[in-house]
Length: 285
Image 1 (cartoon, rainbow, N blue to C red):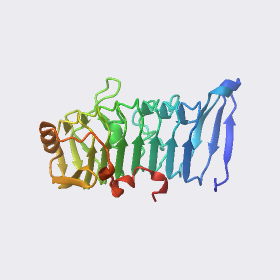
Image 2: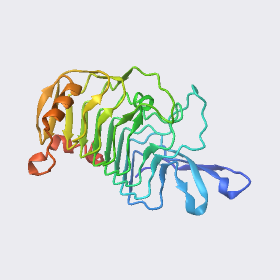
Image 3: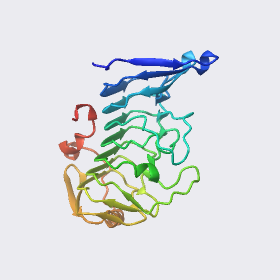
Image 4: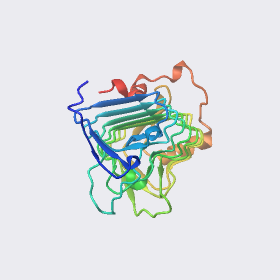
């Protein structure tokens, strides 16, 4: 593995507890963290046992981030202490293209706050999240609007998730009329028993590239959004690769709920090789 010449340094304060280290891995492309213990956050890294915190880990060229089976992780990105004024432009801390979070039972958010311009994940194309039992939502609307490169969103086995995109954060108003994912092709929602909406707010969505939606064992999902959904005709699969075509996700979900068309079991006929390709991003190129 070529780490590209690890660079490091510190900005020396008066006491050890406040030491801030700088570490750079300029050529690191793939980072896999599996079965980590005593790690509440991934980036910046917090070495609580030694009272030394790593406030800036430069992995600017990281292509793939995979975090699995880390029982103490409460957020992926710890951004506390990074004070940036509104409207101030700062280069994102990480510009990863693929991110997989799997088996994080304490995860409640992707980052512990959403400072303006610091972490937009503007390069993110593939996002897979599975088995995160405390995660109620993923993004605020303003954060979601930064995901202009997103192609695949895969969500599975998050039992308390109620919506994917929330309208507000900390009581703040967001003046947004349209949320657009110009490159989103696949939306996969599986085993989300409390999901009631993709976005339970009056926002319009523009999904010009969407061609496949997988909706399996999401019994309470009654609409996509309270606004309108602009998209082409798409294929919605509910079991294996079986499904139907629709031009209106809101209408489809309303009719599906009224008819009670929901399968609560999983068997061999529910497997779809195309869909499963996005379940494990390690082998995806």
